[in-house]
Length: 192
Image (cartoon, rainbow, N blue to C red; front, side):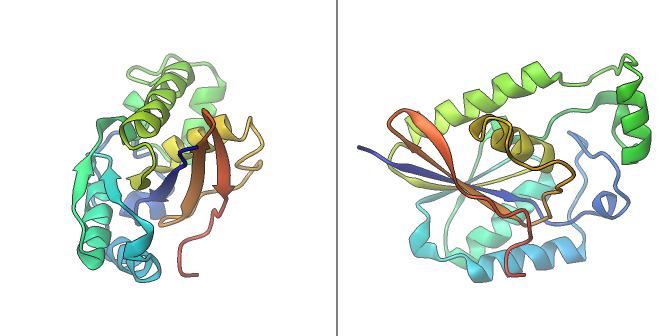
């Protein structure tokens, strides 16, 4: 029985995170706090626990991964499937404005549908299970994407209603016997 471990680390803070603005596929960089969060995450991660680090191509995730990888003496592989959900023309809106627009069933040009996001999430999980079988994979990604992974693997139990995944939070999943399970659910930032 081959076990594969996937750790999904959310990128560090950006200025848009502070303002609760939808980032989506807009490439917003880490701020100073975000870089410090990446260093803090690296300080509590052990090199011996990970075989590979992969990351979304968006700079906030890639830079978080690069900071962690440098501290652990590893390299980063970019995996496009880890990119954040596209919110189309809604990117840049605050969450309250987004919620109003979404709940009104307005047509949001460029929005990645939940069905497409689910398909991409399953594609990533299959990729990890097949290409990284038996390895311990640390993947740096984004809030909405990680939420979708949690929702799929936990059959809708996680994250709980109203729970927010903090920047630099790490959630772990195990693939064994052709199934994924949640190994560790921690919505708080690492090291806190």
